[in-house]
Length: 213
Figure (cartoon, rainbow, N blue to C red):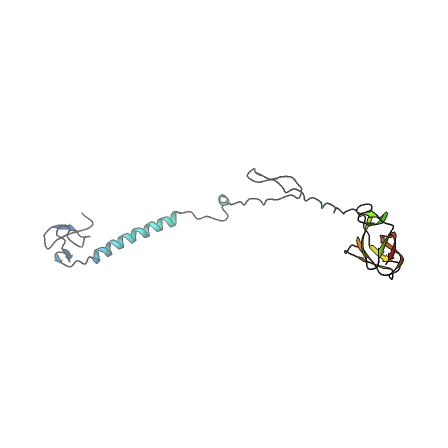
């Protein structure tokens, strides 16, 4: 005996499964057990198929729910270990990584080197007064005449404050030509003799200046 009963189509008089809502032969809709209708609505058949599908899904979900083992926190088989922290020593040795690689350590920081100070200039040993590159210990000039002079300092590279002076400014005056004072100009003022002095670092040189009309 079949579980699902059969019905007889009221249009073509053929039998088909009672699960169907329409006759598979002529397409007439089943109403009751023998009448038919031309209405194309098959909502009852769709509802029945949906109920069957939902029932299958519910049974499958319940089977999976009760057959899947739950993981326990106390289960020794589910222990997850974390890698140990990487320790970097303070010395200059290499560090071994867990995978066997070697991490080279940074080189030690070098000590700051002492600053190199420039040597002090040598002391002044000798000073001379020159005119056009020649040493002069005396010369003659006229009133209002200008004579350019310079100072030679030895040894080469020696430094010191340079000062020019006149023993009698009514006879001649002397004025430096540059900021360092290595050159100066003597100007005759009046008739007479006076001494020109240049001092560099405590070392002096003198020159007699005679002024004529």
